[in-house]
Length: 216
Image (cartoon, rainbow, N blue to C red; front, side, top):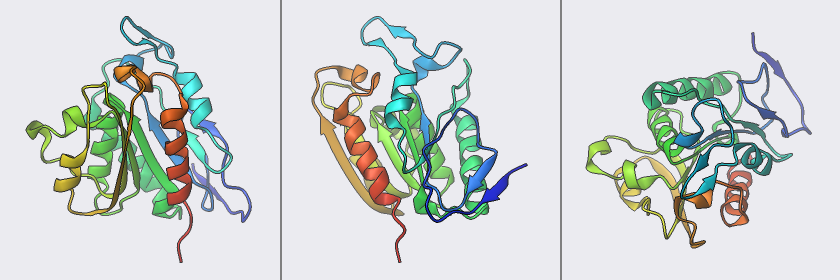
């Protein structure tokens, strides 16, 4: 059962690995979806090319006193379409219980970004803030041309990685309220998002806080 709390002063600061039992309508909520390599039971798996995926450290660095961070550890073999449907359902729970849309952000990297883009697509009628990290190599292809983002969208990609700009996604997403894109050049390829480096952590947190402000 979900209980609703009311406060004028608290904005968040908790890290959850499950959907929270209590919802505060005046707090901000961020859903982070990790990359494919983390699916399973190991939160710090190692890729031979890009090193260790530091899921716990990423959660700690993404967390902030101004919002609650929800980061599920997906099991091995997760169906991205079904998980995106479940994530969209969780977002709708927040909306149904009075959390306004701009207080909710969904963010994902790689496979998690694909899930996040799907979730944004499923939330066309109730769009929230969306951040895609190294996302659009796959999403921008003609195979997934039906996927469209909604609301406010931020894309961050590494210039030495195969997943580049999200401008194709922007062009076909006719319901976008805004689109911003940041390119980083660390030389770390896809592994740039395997650990919480300031090149992407800082713009992500700044954008979340900017978009989460209540507008008159």
